[in-house]
Length: 114
Length: 109
Image (cartoon, rainbow over all chains, first blue to last red; front, top):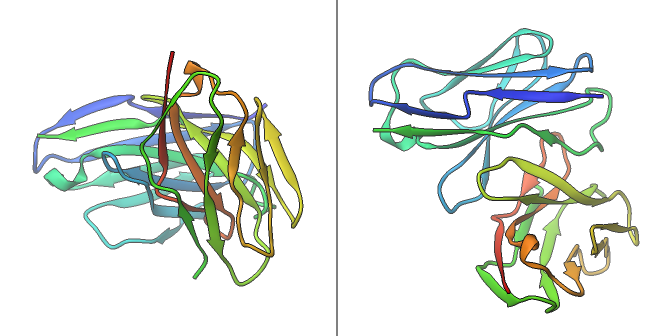
């Protein structure tokens, strides 16, 4: 069966420090991968999605970037964190062959920028 | 573009009460529709789905029917429990999945 792993679970970082969040999927090939952010008390905002290695689409211009160095690995990064980057970051995947499939989410990373 | 409008919360209920969360959508085609649930501190879990008009999705006592004529996908449960306390998201499927703002539900014993 397929599983998605996201780490770390929680992170506290100072303003101006770098960020790297990692997400990996097991048990499937060529998934579509997604990064969402959920600010406190708010809905989900799509940040990036990827349909293949090295292919990244950005939905919202901001202080973050994403990379997909391997088929089942998706990384969210920042060179210098801002206070406004605080939030709950969720990675998700679905089969690359079907846009009617639901997304499957990881357990999220709670990021607090101080 | 495609979008979802979801009933705002928070919603507070007593155990065994009836729950309805309204969701309407705007779409150019006939997307699949989903309800997700998020328990405190966790990621989102798929609760139920419907892929075409008049489909009824159901799971854990929750139901939602895909109504093309009213462009709606309202979530219902006849008798809620304390363990149903969570945030519920309606979502519409296109290339990315568009989510509603989420509705926080609290069930009191």
